[in-house]
Image (tube, rainbow, N blue to C red; front, side):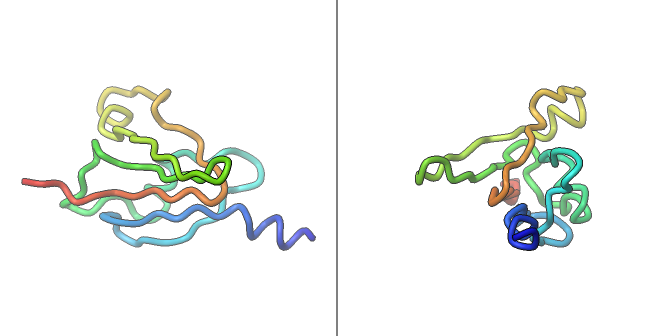
Length: 97
């Protein structure tokens, strides 16, 4: 039982990050979008940091939450750094130059 509960606390960080990976939400505190990205080595040089997307299943429907990480890191707007839920996918797209 315990192992299964632990296994279900996974989030996926994909796209333009240094080491795309599945990571565990720590049991003691929530994991935010920025913390998840930091834990996989941060953004690549071509990441669109203002267009990060969190894909989440809610009530059987996939929802998409846009997160402007630039606002969090440059303006210090911590309210945008949302806590992740088990099963979330954090996707960092490539910036279009």
